[in-house]
Image 1 (tube, one colour):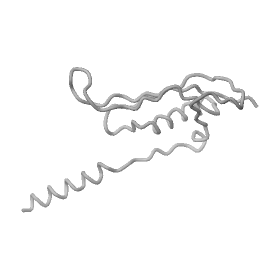
Image 2 (cartoon, rainbow, N blue to C red):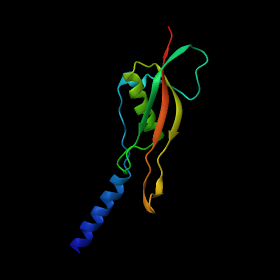
Image 3 (tube, one colour):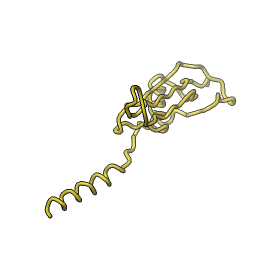
Image 4 (spheres, rainbow, N blue to C red):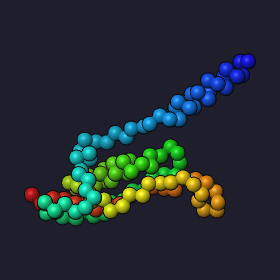
Length: 118
């Protein structure tokens, strides 16, 4: 009887904590880096370089599009960018990989870091 109660408690704990969402907090400065999906036509800018990121392969990594965009913003901020132009965002997937084993594919994202002319 006691074993059943412990097992039930454990399963309920896993159920509720397994569905919890984690939030990534970034610096205020990095979040000010604007995100564009096409080149901005209203302002002239200089390309600073390409920024890219990729996620981990476990269930403990943030593999969402939003998470990857935040990482791109942080990298672009370190370069002195005002904005990024997103080139690609490939969210990771779960399924068969390699030699018919299951797992997570890494998510990948790339963008061009830009600085607006004043």
